[in-house]
Length: 128
Image (cartoon, rainbow, N blue to C red; front, side, top):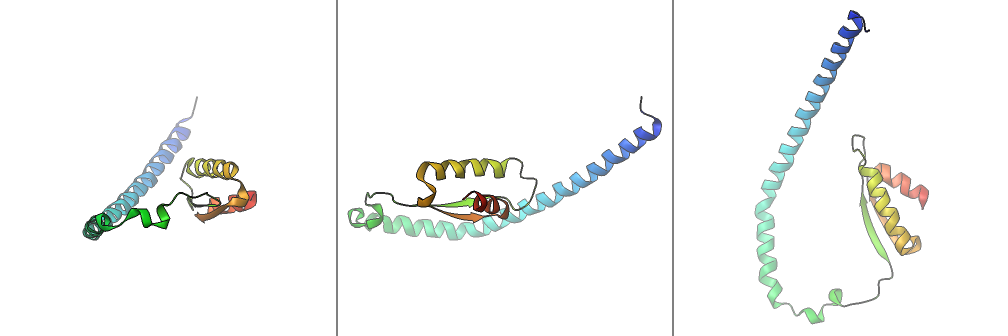
């Protein structure tokens, strides 16, 4: 059975962890709020851009566009986004599995990778 001192130390430890997680929660809430504010500020610009695109789109003859023509795919480019820091759970390993599957499917000589995030970039450079 645990002694009284052990129980007090455990309670102290739990309270300390609660303080840290509470602080992390407050920081993340502030970051989310800031991101939401930036998104709201950008909304008028995206709305105006959407209106311009919808206005121009009907006038474009899509049969003449080279970008929409069917052609053989010779190379693929992937932008792989991963976390730089911890607390990402299985995010990096899941992204790595998907990237490896795509590379194996198409052949690594026919794939260009652009990595955003240090951790996965290091791992993919070692494997390729």
